[in-house]
Length: 600
Picture 1: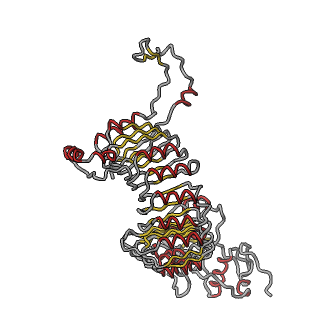
Picture 2: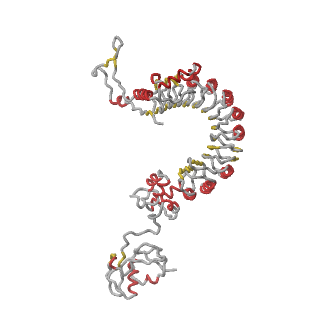
Picture 3: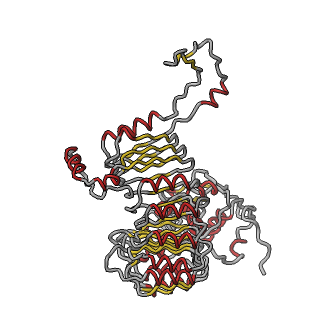
């Protein structure tokens, strides 16, 4: 072993000691310019004294005296003594004006920076001041960068070393990611981003290009612990994933609990087997040969079929399989023109006691008999959507008799057999109702948009008396909990009276026959009114009632009525008791912001 080594800051009395101590491994970078030594020729040699700055000026004594200097100065002195030189000073070269790091992001694009986020490893204290961050603590920088989108994160990684390390940690700590994939992006772009997030649990992709099984393989490889996956496609993109490929993906991802996918027109058929899957949304389905669900823990399912007429999917078989293999279902949404009374009977035969939401949309063959089957099998529904069905006011009566204490959302749009009387009865018998959609329900079957009032009068004169009740309908709703009401396209509505203190959203789009004189809105909480494709006088009446009903100005000065009761006169200012400052602040109401939307 070697003897005792002196500390670098300790003065060295014998320069020959540096020669005897042996060779030590030095730095891999040049000590003068900072560049790597491999294949490097430093431009700042020891002879360039004109660009050097003296560091220390030791006085050279006699040969037997000691030279007091630092370790680096002593090394230079010994080397010069061995070569016979006797310099007057020990110098160090001046660094270049712009010293380039061995790994720089100055000339790297955003796409290339994805692959370099983890090349350089170093540790940072949690509250340390990062290099180049303006003395900003790491915890504050973390909170700022974590709110950036993925593109902003990639740009932030190119700022400095500290920001790069922070973004690297953010990528690794990310549990939820929403990413838009442009049309020109390759699959490698998605893979390089996902590989930086090994702990990702929720992934949402908005894809503008075609998607196939390669995307599923990339997700399965990069996200081993993925729990939620959403794939949204644009109008120009095509989803080429088949049913077998999606079935294998679901079977392999044992942690997957939620799957939502658009553009599923090429599935053909599938067999889903998963014990963890609880939410499944599939849209644009078409002509499925088989649909098997072996998902005992499935609680929510949404199947949206395409509107094409040549769809050959057997909805009754699908519904029967759901009822037998998914006993824990709570929310069911099926949108298909092939929905029928037989499908409702198959669903009613299943033992789905926990069902809370039932949505059977566009089933023109669903009638009042189907409503009777639903009410006899499911007694705890909170949402019922039978839009596009053929039910009548009798079906609404059955709904009100069974769900008066549970139903909070009722959607009956595109139901031509329902009249204003049925809607009024539902509003009166369902006290917990918060949302009601009756769009295109109170509709004139012969009404067409006319720009001339004389044409309208001519059409009304030619209309038989038996159909006048479908045109001149009056709707009166008084409800204490209703928040949203939609009457879009109700061209048969003639008069409307609303007394709903909690109503905040009202849709009157395309209510062309609604008379301004027969409109009364007593809704102090109203925030938005949609009145596109309505008459100009109706829009002005809506604005006048909405803005005049605003409680922005409130007068608390007492008033007094004259003996004949004709008008009120205010008491003199000095006679009325003045409220204190606290009472003024407590009584001052906030101005309600209500907008009337007249653009479609």
